[in-house]
Length: 145
Image 1 (tube, rainbow, N blue to C red):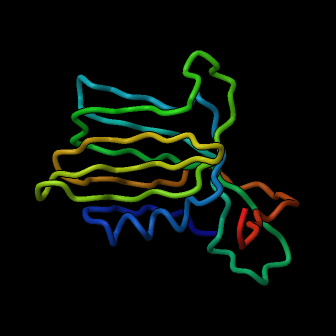
Image 2: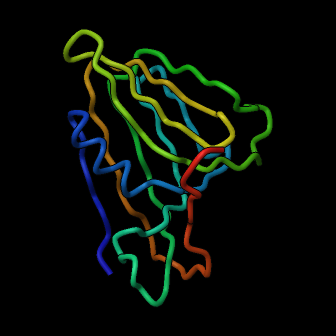
């Protein structure tokens, strides 16, 4: 088992990280905005998509993701007072505003979202510890809702 350590400095790099963190679960208490060092960080239980669709077993791994150069963080539809609240991360994206600045969006199920205004995109995903087995492989319905 290998551990991931991925860096992102542009939208294309962030798409690679997004593919690896899709369907990660975390609690509200696992989010941290550190304005004094201009960092936004989160710790999550990441589904290990890299095992492939035909894997006989599935696993999750504790992973950390942080963004540097964050000037502002905006939260939508996340009850910050409910630290035990569970969030399901759907995707990450980056929209350039005035190069190299832009907006990083973290989109969660249920309409929850975090927007990070960054001076320049710098992100890192790092796996921590050991993976553990899970019976459930995330699935998404395709079609009109």
